[in-house]
Length: 94
Image (tube, rainbow, N blue to C red; front, side, top):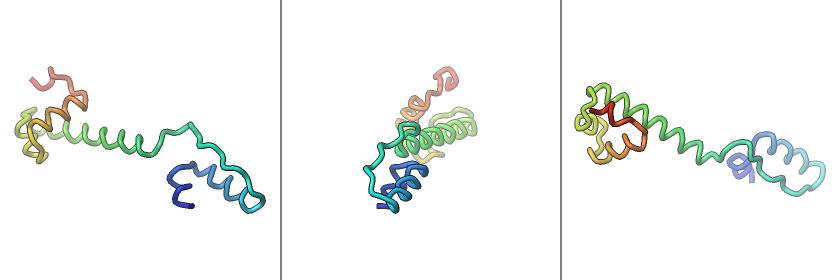
């Protein structure tokens, strides 16, 4: 039960529910829509970190995409996909 509270609810809701459960039974409160789900936050952070690493590697290789792909230990095609996904303008790569 505690694992699901930690993963799914805000700290405030956990405290409220624990306090309420010790005094009297109450129906579960709906999740707050104020903060996005953990999964989407994690996905966003991974994309940002990936973008930074790719840009750093491209700068270090003087924007040579083949050398950058080798340095990142990914295929050239994967690098091209990730560059496009990261939103790096093509003019910078030329």
